[in-house]
Amino acid sequence: MSYTAHIDTFAFDNLPPAELQPEYVFELPELQFPERLNCAAELLDRHVAEGRGDRLCLQADGVRWTYAELQDKANRIANVLTRQLGLVAGNRVLLCAPNNPMMVACWFGVIKAGGIAVAAMPLLRAKELSTIVDIAQISHALCDDALRAEVLGAQQKSPVLKSVCFFNVRAEDAGSLEALMDSASPHFEAVATAATDTCLLGFTSGTTGVPKATMHFHRDVMAACACWPQSMLRAHADDVFVGSPPIAFTFGLGGQVLFPMSIGASMVLLEKASPPLLLDGIEKFGATVVFTAPTSYRVMAQQGERIRQTRLRKCVSAGEALTASTRALWKDATGIEIIDGIGSTEMLHIFISHREEDARPGATGKAVPGYCAKVVDEQGNEVPPGTVGKLAVLGPTGCRYLADSRQTQYVQHGWNLTGDAYLMDADGYFVYQARTDDMIISAGYNIAAPEVENALMAHAAVAECAVIGEPDSERGQIVKAFVVLRAGHAAGDAMARELQDFVKRTVAPYKYPRAVAFVDQLPRTATGKLQRFRLHGQ
Image 1 (tube, rainbow, N blue to C red):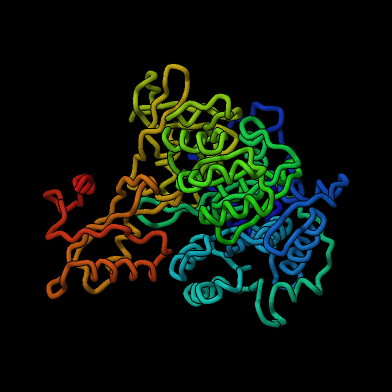
Image 2 (cartoon, rainbow, N blue to C red):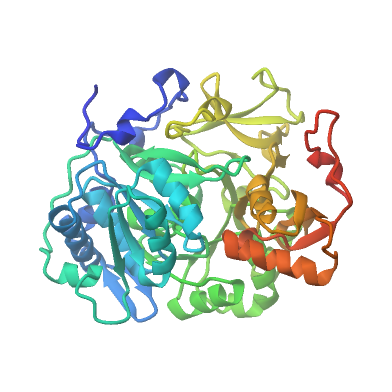
């Protein structure tokens, strides 16, 4: 067994076998990492140690923390975890909150203590949270008090979750995280974790609806900070980052926390970041760099003159394909060229992108320095330019599913197959075509069709159903459900609304079907297999 600082070796023991992991590429000088590395110490403690503790780090409504103040909070949380709540290095900790300062402080506290952060979106219900807890065998949870009911509901379903502590508690509570922090020491030396110790689990939905836990090392976090941000984003220490993706998404974690802190810049956290509220935040906090999905850019472009009066200078799009029309609309309205990119939870962040001056309408870009990419056929052979095939990627990060047989689907012949269909043009630009599975990507959210189907089938009126992604000019895709009703139930607008509300109460609300079609039967093969492809265009 190679060196690990983890006392709880659950993550180490459940890594994919070496022969099933992808190849890794560390050719750039900045990707040469020491054997022992704690990414929280690199991203936070280093700035304080080097005299930048007084620099602004984090802003939110009513909050302005310097790097030193965030370090104080993170250290106290690390002490609470290790001295009061019994955490040992390698334990998994559920973090569930909107994008707010305490969520960030908890993330750093967990990582400094040698724990493994498992961030979950604040919209998830108890059922979904309990699945995450069971897969990751999560023992501790630090969560926003606004999510108390769902988190406690998950704890009831999953007895392995022994310690739950809430923050941002509205009333006096001796057991709140803040109360425990008050009596904790502000000093904590980050655990000397291995560069190859897992520090975060990022959950992603599979096409079966059963989520997969992607395992990322301390070195992966620092590699993500060293590649795309340095070569493509090219921000500086005086920039102010803001965005809409939840920190529970690795896109949000990178763009709003890791990348600004890697260069000593500052972040703005918005608990709610609809396009109007995101634009308000850009104005209020003087944001210069924004991360959001094409959906938001299309809406905010209507306020082009207002945006031109702000300090905004860099705009990043990911989460779904950026159309040429959206790029042009934003450029015409604001004068700013969008930096497009594709990443994945499995790869941690963006691996194909471009600089503003190299943008090409309709194309995602080229492989980010540190990564290489190609388009392959079903046998894994590279195809000629202009040919549609499967996107394959190599780099310093790669897919490691926690104890999941689907590892062999994502990693083949040492390459990461992202599930995206692409072509590469004659100039080496990668052009997105479609998803190669049944994943629905709506306004930047990944939604597994079978999960929505399972939620619908729990309604007493539903006999059968099938869910697909339908093209939509605003959201990229919307969830559309085809429903066969049981006898005695009437189709119509009222039933559609009832089913939509039912799904919202069962799973995260963004997964609900925005369109419902009632049909007499679903298309199936002779053996009874559902043929989703025949539903498209209906």
